[in-house]
Length: 234
Image (cartoon, rainbow, N blue to C red; front, top):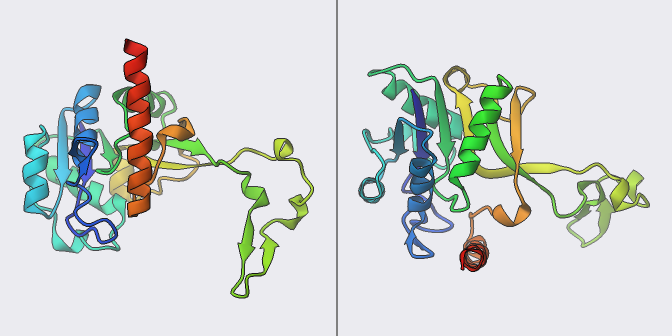
């Protein structure tokens, strides 16, 4: 069995109620649910939440909310892996889970075809995990720090005069979804390691949504991408 697990607790602070807040005409979580359902990858799409309203919205958009997440897995400090492992253990009471995909509730840029492509990577490489990543806009080797007095220094001063095109390209997690084998989730193996593979995305389809500024930027990008897609279909 393959399951999707969408973690969506009710205690968001920087953007209150962000999991069910309207984003481009739908509750934010609805975009993740829809992508999971349309991908055709899953036997079950589960939303793991401690919140009744989130549960009601998730159900209305086609997800299953078969349990309420325990309080000890619902605070600000709970990492992703234990939440997914909890859902896998719950589901395994009625059938074996082979693979599970954690899809964040605030990931409106997730596409069904990306979920399918990452699953192929997971299977094709016999990896523990597969996830989306994208490149940094600026070479990380040229990053600077600013101290308390406003003074500047480079993190890697040896690259002060290195041309950007001569520096190795660096990637970061897109923060959208993580496919994983059930045994990897249950064992608590780290997602970012040599047993993982990454699906590269264009930067324009990647945006963390942790602050109101992030939210506004994401809506602008999402709207522009939708307009481009509609123009292409015309």
